[in-house]
Image 1: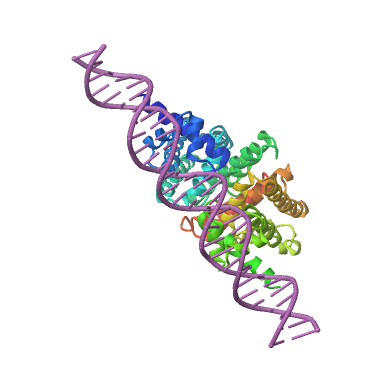
Image 2: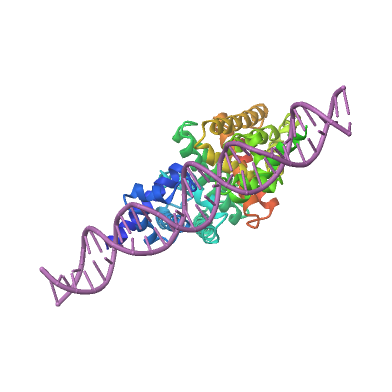
Length: 190
Length: 190
DNA sequence: CACTATTGTGAGGTTTTGCTCAGCTCTTGG
DNA sequence: CCAAGAGCTGAGCAAAACCTCACAATAGTG
């Protein structure tokens, strides 16, 4: 079981190094050094550099499920609260990951395996949000599928921007505007 | 003046290669090959690889101004049309550039020069949109600065997604939903 | 303690990349 | 047609990256 621990150390170090230097400049040697492990060990657990990023994505997906989604209040008039919970979850779950996810999406352009994993991750999350809003009585939007995609992506990517450039606005102001936009959208016209 | 032409050929090729292979894997040799120019010529016009990306950003900024913004109808009741023009402009102007801009933002993390150029580009565009909506009578949002940032980024990045993964929805459907979301947001409550 | 299985090591081979430079080709003015 | 300079070439070098492999250290078992 020492093995599992080393594997985890390597993955954590890889996340750090990829975020700090980018994928290409995040060399395997640097990763091993940061994990305080020899390169040989790294290549004992991963056949090549891409596999490290792929494993990192699996880890991200496993951690990134929206746990509280099932126990939300769906009473009429609570739409803003529901949306706020969605936005808060995105903010909370993305302390260090945003740049990493961007790297994954970027690099997924060249790797079938990564691309499919990213796509599946997205679909899973969209489906969860779609089902949630399908059950909410205040939602009055025509095409719920498109709406869910639009919302998930918009919330996620704006959160990433907030993390990447922190001094544009305060977190609260940003959160309020984003919640306002999504809520009014979901409520529909009138 | 043969020189200027070669410089342009190199830049165009660089855009192509960076988009196709990413920044790190977009080697200078590949760029030269695609431009049908020798490596030596490339290094006659650019001191190093980073300078090529920087020049590409300058080119992008120069081309990316929103020309029709000044001659838009700002009569009451025309907000949706104004927003639609904004979205259409984003769609039209981003046939090949979206991935390139992402690479620039990504790489800007490691280059002062690039970071500042990207930031200036963003501010310029946000200011233009803010001024436009400040003049429109239908807009009823509290914090116009934050709103403009949110809208510009959301429209841009959703357009990028549409281009990158084309078969999620049709362009019209996507355009309608995005326009609807932004319009209802700008109109404010009630 | 002895023996095996598991896990870890790191110098270095192979490949790739950014970049140089000595010399070539093309254009242009007289 | 010629000379001079502007523009272009591409083999190859130094540096750096990915990855291998023969071996060392550690953990587990009787």
